[in-house]
Image 1: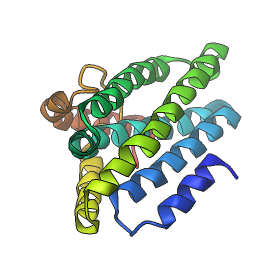
Image 2 (image 1 turned 135 degrees about the horizontal axis):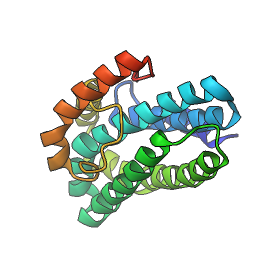
Image 3 (image 1 turned 90 degrees about the vertical axis):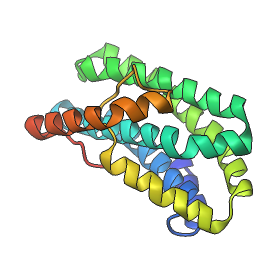
Length: 195
């Protein structure tokens, strides 16, 4: 059974709208998209990468703004800071990938290393952060976090912004403007900004 399948099964055991359920479902989708990018060719590869890029940008922003403050209280400063640092590094690599030719061998090599880092990050969240958040919150709080996370995702930037990544304060200051610019850029280019 694939890890994406296991994440979907775990998510299905949780109440609808629970923040951990939402994030597990997104982790499974991210794994699927990495597989799809690796197997696609030409314009389909570019479109699939654009979808992956948008999902990762939105997902990480929402985690930093909504999940991370709760994780900091429930799992500790060190755990929250480690995840924010990983997201900051991932954002830099995602920005580099976005500028590359998706048909190049260099892109494929960088994507493979990036995928490993993203999967390692997700597994740390699933094994360390999510259990602490679930233990420290009741069902109503988890659903409230899930609703807030999904609201933030609707207005989050769809492209990487390395200068704001890893810092919730910077995300709050630059996020709304960056999101507006990203969504206009997506509309003009026809790239996937949908999440």
